[in-house]
Image (tube, rainbow, N blue to C red; front, side, top):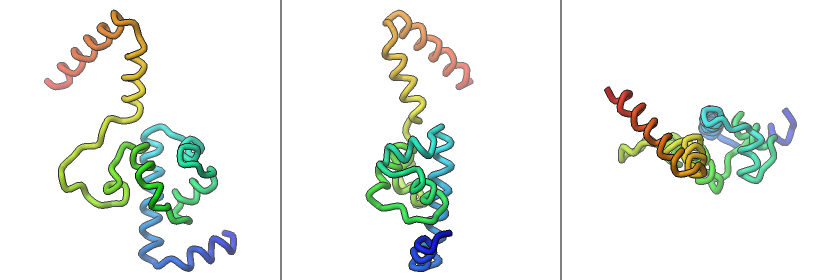
Length: 129
């Protein structure tokens, strides 16, 4: 580990170190769940892949200004991202993959959209029973 990073980590309290390691692990886990690479997430955030890697490893503090974007991309609330349990019982929104699929369906001709929606209705009804 470089001396600059070691010096930076020395400035953090143990609680800070623990928090940022947990946050980094959560970011990495959610990123993988959403099938997003470190490079893709770094590009969205406007940082290098090396910074993203350092965030996920807990070696760097994630700036609070990045939390809303991270939460949106990872389909989670900022509160849940930083480890605060939701108080209103809200579920996470649709996953980015689902949103992409909806967008793809909307690009189909109307007749094919109807076919896909009918199939989805059938699958959802079967899953509910």
